[in-house]
Image (cartoon, rainbow, N blue to C red; front, side):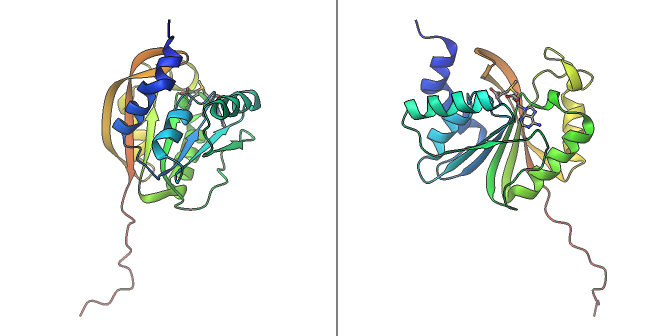
Length: 201
Ligand SMILES: C[S@@+](CC[C@H](N)C(=O)[O-])C[C@H]1O[C@@H](n2cnc3c(N)ncnc32)[C@H](O)[C@@H]1O
């Protein structure tokens, strides 16, 4: 019988990613991609003219992700082996969407602040940052997220020039089984225009 991972990778994952806003031809960063349970369906949704950057500090996970992607004939995944530092080696305003799925609990509040600012830098103007804040206080609390609930997380991200655009409660894959969880999508605030020095006539 098909297990949850196979079911997700065969079809459910693509439906999920389309629902949260991933579209054909987009460039997507999957930060902390692990074994690629979101990377692989995202690569299918964006298609051959799109691209998914799969970033992780775990080389074993990246290798397994690429092996699986190859076995499906998927060629539009670009692996990025990270040092664990939070500088993302991508250009300013170069991606349409960033997935931060089941990864925030690894980071201190200072590190999270850094990742939001990097996300702001590399997202295009109309891009979005999508967060699956697993392991917050209301959902199997763990490590650095165990004292925060969804509203705390929303407030934290909104302090970093983003605003909450959409909130979903959806079936998704956590670890290797289907589960239900919240997804928070944030958009960039419009750049603040300084009026200092403007002469009013
Ligand atoms: C629980 S897994 C989630 C994997 C995937 N996003 C998913 O939802 O299936 C978290 C991943 O984030 C990675 N990670 C954590 N902190 C990281 C960092 N600072 N830089 C890169 N990867 C990181 C870990 O190596 C791990 O593979």
